[in-house]
Image (tube, rainbow, N blue to C red; front, side, top):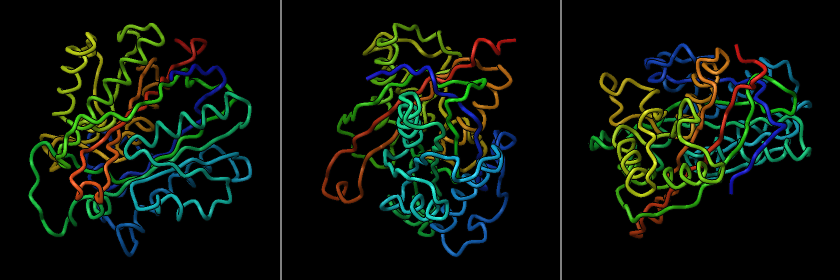
Length: 335
């Protein structure tokens, strides 16, 4: 399921990052950061996440000089029960809303849905948004951070922030050229701390199908970028693609989870995770590098572990998914 688009462009993005993200190597690529307080003036972790998401959407509307009535659809999701952060943040915007869930692959799922609406002529302007908060996510999926539960070195660190992107049918410098919908892949892993091992096979399947469907060599892209596999998941993916699919991406591959933080200096274990991890890197760093033409073709592959705490306690394994979206600088803008 790979689709080509010819009428979908990125108008702009807006990113709001939290404390650890502000201390990371990509801080200068975000529109707004919170350097100190993880509550961000709110009364709970959940309300803090709602605030970040709300600010990213409001910031994007202001940045692009759009009113809420100018937007056809807003598509958003998050990690909270019943995508609560999206529901509560977007209730104030008076925009038709589609709530989605694909764990940490939410942003790419949203881009594919929005791009399909726009390319078919059913919509002209769509916002795709997502968020996550370290403390809120850890409390829901593992243990409250206040417990101080030890973690293994393969664990990842849920990113904190809100990120939004405006897609439109109006030509701009960067287009959405194609996308590949992922399959649910489950290799039987049951370790909730080892998300890299859970998601790497799903990323490999999607990348391999994307390249095959479009008859592309990995070198076509300046960068192939997964969402949140972390330091150990990165290695698994590269080896898995070589052994199973005979594809080598080692020369132009990276992972958002290892770019968002300095994994050697910050206490983030194997790197970042969460829906906003890939969104901050893709909507912040990647987008701005493409505007400067330091990158011209990028395949973003946000990855998601689709596990439920309820099913985990019933001894189920952890399924995963990854969706690929191709971003390309329009040739007419080449320097």
